[in-house]
Image: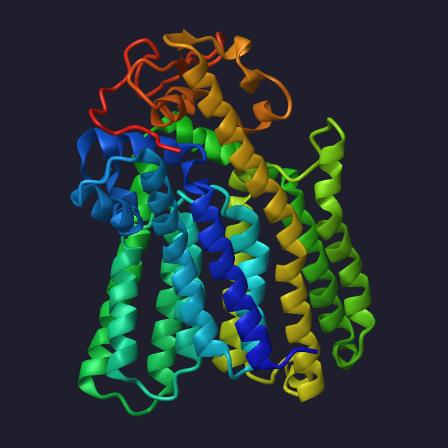
Length: 449
């Protein structure tokens, strides 16, 4: 079983290693990210089209905008920097949570589980602000339950993070009041309340509740009614994400076992069955050897994001209960206080994160190859390229195609103005940023290999 120091270092190295690799492979361009890149190049300014998403968008675009201000016009470099900003924000927040929990094996295991179960299985759509919102929920909860006194440093952190949360979109509709309740409980349980840190803690409540109100407004008056309806309709399709399915199944085995037979957490029994699910998860890339849809799929990570929010709520409640709310009231908590049980619990959390790596490698390599195909297609001919006559219409590249974004992906990867633009499928009638035969002029911005 790993020590807390080893588990902390392994997880830290893993999430930052993946963040840098994902950025190098321009994974931030997946779906909406390509439109972000094109709009930033077109405007030479932040792409801030929707107020409820504003703060997370702007922070994530800081690296690419720095490069644009410095005169860099290579869209390949800018794609990597956009990806870096998008991945670095939630990764940095999870890093702070890991650092705060590293001396408690159970809390550290909970943070690692959040990274493995949620972040690593739903972040292919890294442009989605839910990645940041979920990371905020974990780091705030860990920081609050480990607080032994109200400090100015913690208060400032909470105030800043809650300010970021105000415009981090829909997930704050439930995370906002939950985090506010934990802040109130922290103020209540700590008897000494200096005025300045207490005021900062209270200010953070305003931020979290403000995020809830903004999220409510984004649903009552959505940017696109069609998009909102689609989000609601596809929320039940989380099962299509087999990475998420197997890792949640593994966790449920341990959770249910711990509730029914808590003393078994001192042994290997609950983990043996859970590891079967993790072993299957690690082998899922082999499913790509067939032509079926039962395999790790990038697009399925997007539809699992709402279910992932329920997992985050559960982990937040676990951290809160174990750390300060219920303490040892549950038998499972009392067992987890024992070093042997805590070490096994931590070791299982590390295995969760490691088991997802093979499918992550498969998906990332598949994405890199997909971008190569897009590049080759748009540079092979000029004008409008019918989707049906392109390589993207064939398996397996069609699994990564989102119809409305094809013109933006094509425009981003052109080496010169006369290169081609891949049109959406002929039966596609929905909105797209620009008609394929009249692309945005991007001036000197081109994709350089």
